[in-house]
Length: 379
Image (cartoon, rainbow, N blue to C red; front, side):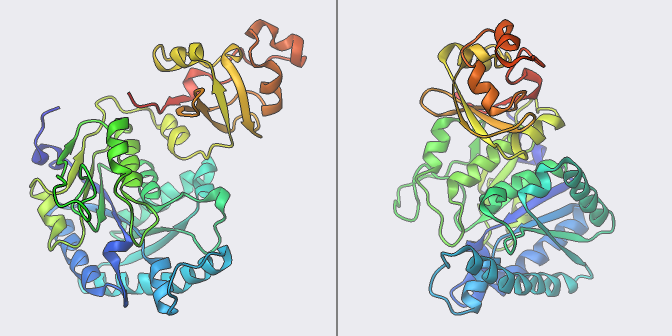
């Protein structure tokens, strides 16, 4: 794909913009100058291009930490939830005041992964976002840190922004951070590091490069941002990672300049149902497979049969999401399982014809059917 940035950005109408803690906060608290500048830039684009904007905003916990005068991030869950509640009000007030200057309203949308794992709540969230956009209101999304527990966390707002881009049928994800994009090394410690302006496909090599660039105030470093770009690319959505501290960064991006790192979308995006399986359902366990099953899944896009299973980790029920891994515990795929974990343990290594003899019943020949399976392995 050799399209220019202008070609890629020209048809964009709905954008998810993720703004990181390194952009939004300083040692004194929220960076109101940046919030005001970004709000003006975003409003200008909405007015000139008719864009629909969804913001995924970090900064609540960092703001709360500084508001309370704490020297570091609290360790206990209850304290983290408390500082998130304290910081969230300041964060929303800052956005409300910033956009009010241009006659725009904002809406707070707090979600947990559990909200999106449940299909009905997933659709309700989607309908709410579309209603807000139809009313010309800017949704500002954050994880509901005040009630969330580890089992239903998104992990970081990079992952949340990817899920929101997919859920909302966005045409573009913009991830604003405190550095200029993806480099071949950490530019803060290596002056000879070079910016990578364009990524055709997120390979294991690209992910390894990203892992060398850690985060600062936020939870997610460059690796989580690249993973989010990979996830939405599989759904046909491009991503731009850029420096949110640069003046008029949004306008610069939409002028088609070589700003930040552009991640191209895959030319054949997956179906909406597989979007949900791959990026929204939280895996409840893992299934390790042998080399033959790995080849069948990855190279021939076949279903997972019990004969290829060699180990089961965790406890899951019929219809739960599981991660399929190879013998080195590397992720190969995510899929919806047809049998309980205890039953998979009983039939692993056996032929499908033997399932009923062992379990006393047989609903399916496959442990995971190919229609309910999404490959995740990079070349």
